[in-house]
Image 1 (cartoon, rainbow, N blue to C red):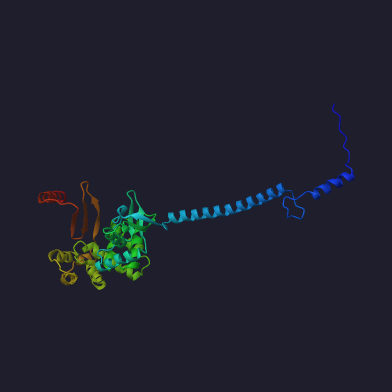
Image 2 (cartoon, helix red, strand yellow):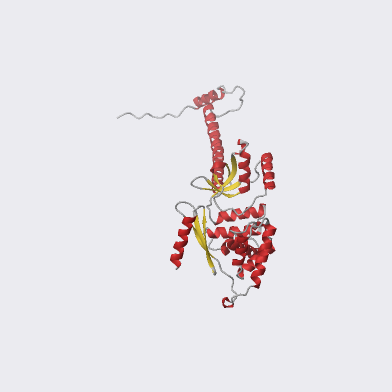
Length: 355
């Protein structure tokens, strides 16, 4: 078994010598006069301090970057980030447009403004399988396409990519933009309500008017419904629909509710107007003649109702639609050309079917 070594207390004189030795030991810094901690300890402390500060700074920067990234992703998801999109990737017929005619002079002014100052308000689009569908900004897109024909500067257009489809939100956005930037005509307001309802975006024309013009007064929505009726009954025959004044449109709607659709359609079909004024003159004559015609009292004076049959696409192209009124049926074929023999066969089939 190993022997234990006895500890002996140091002599007081030896301790004094050790302390004097440390005191007289030269400092690492020749200009340092005060007693300091050992150099290695000082270096370690300073390094630890610096590392701690760097860690805090990095964490703050990281948190800021993460916050910015989260806000960026949120803004991008909400369609608030402007993206540059190729004109060729944008479908301008993604939804039915509310404006029927364009002012050539206003378009030229818009092109000049974009060329000089750039586009101040990006267009709005929705992501589709084939690219992007235009929601609002039809005139700006048309201006860019015209400018792109002469300069590659305009082959891309600034756009907000919205999370939307060709549904109610898209139609509301389009109408709101045109109401603010360039007022629609009375007829165009009624027309877009009918088109949106026909595409089953809204359950009815009434619902379309209430949604698309929800911020308008009750009286204004009533006028939109009146022009919607005009479009439903006469839209395919009117040559200058946007030329109808508010008073003229309301008079036509009243005549239609009183059962004058047949006379009005016949007047438009038989005579070809040269301008809006001449078209209104022949409509007035038709309304006047209809007002003096004897009315069927058995109907109790009820307005003539028109039922629109939803359009049906044909396998080989084109579409069939129809409208049914109290006094007749009207079938329309769009997008296809048929010869007289085929038309005769169709009439024979209908005649055989209804007897």
